[in-house]
Length: 154
Image 1 (cartoon, rainbow, N blue to C red):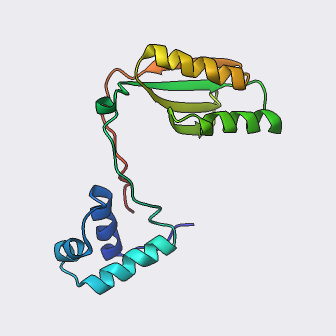
Image 2: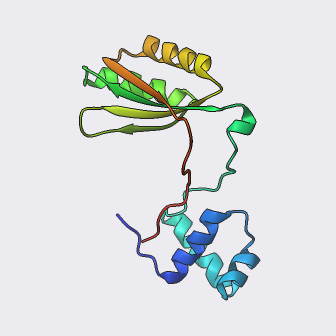
Image 3: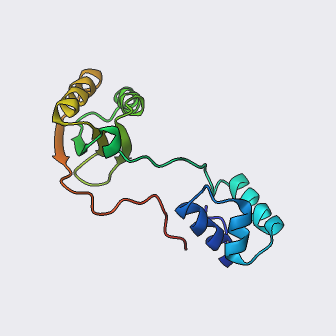
């Protein structure tokens, strides 16, 4: 269920999505508001679950994680036991940055970040040892065109 937001809430969220390390003083200054109302709004948005947390964004290439693969998975099994094994395997692998269950011909898509193709193969081999998969198609991203964590604010 959507939490109602006004213009000031959206402006606060926009600033925090750009740089969550901004001080309360700086956020209030940029918005032309006083600190107390800004702090109260941030606190309320945290309590409502609008703001989930604050993280540091890292450059994967500078950490040696130069390869990004998208893994399309089709399964012939849809029972609870298979799903539990699959979810456990995917959630336990730090290489998996995102996992989505899809509508349509493909059941799941994974975004996997690894140093190279050899590391991806090791990831793939480990995954299929943990859970049976009917069909897997993997694609290497040649170029990242857009990557953002900022959500469009309604």
